Length: 82
Image 1 (cartoon, rainbow, N blue to C red):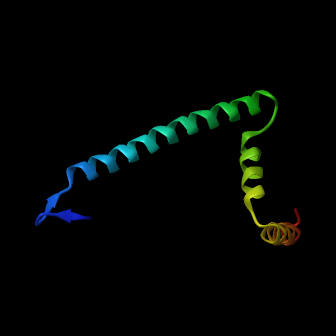
Image 2 (tube, rainbow, N blue to C red):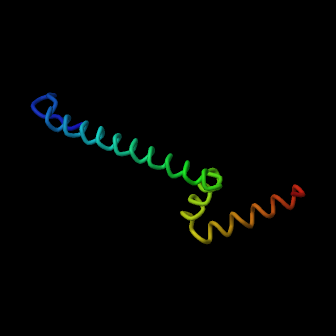
Image 3 (cartoon, rainbow, N blue to C red):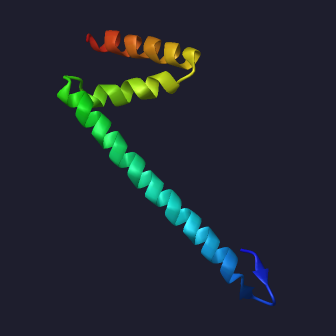
């Protein structure tokens, strides 16, 4: 924490930081509400939100990492007779 004048707190800087965090919290809440609406729309269209989340996660992955994951999943499934 940056301090000025022998331990005094820079009130203006502190207020600015807190306001920025509050603004980001508000934006995050708005985004969460938007995501909830999108998943509700997907569900009403017959899609399973659980699998949509999974597909979003998979699309973020590096292609090599995704390929390795698929191969390992197949190996494990085969070993379990699934």
